[in-house]
Figure (cartoon, rainbow, N blue to C red):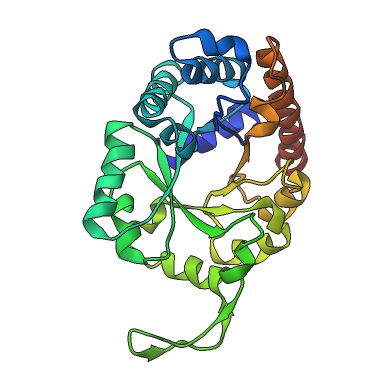
Length: 286
């Protein structure tokens, strides 16, 4: 999917909602456990109930890998179902991969070619040769961790850093996440980059937008983790919206009863309506 196609979907649906498909068999409705593939059946029901309200789905691969080959098969069936039934939906493999050269190339092939995701999340700690293999795929997007929503983000990401790189002095100290953002823009095919920025760090969005004004930001942490949608939009939205707001637990586990589909849709609709109001205020009255 191209960036423009994603932007078009945001405009059509008046939504920038990404639904996280993080399936835990201990939390899904018990009546589904009798089915041959309860993970896929749960996902299918959630997708069918929310596809007109969401522009993206984001399975976190850990929730599938935890169940071995059966879990991986459920993931494969889920992405195939989205691609074949709702091809205009943007898909995100939340895998947080990050390794050098040939290994990254194989990770990229797994998610972009075999599973046919539109995007995958990656960790940049090992530098450009761990990320550029993902960027080489046309019309595929690499979503790089920049400033995350967890408490441990302050261990490294916001530290001031200075020193040498490639034998040359860097001028002045800056937070590590800013250095990551600035450096990533110099990599080959960097136009295919998006970035993960946690909603609980809303006060940082202004500085982030100075560095990557046009890039899409995948934003976890709204709702259950305490992030504010209005604050994120106030400081992080750009001329094309430029945000994908992820919600997982609040939607998919709105109920663990037989009414889970209806409750999931209700929660997704609440978020979509709030997003539509924000879009209207920002763009349609200008």
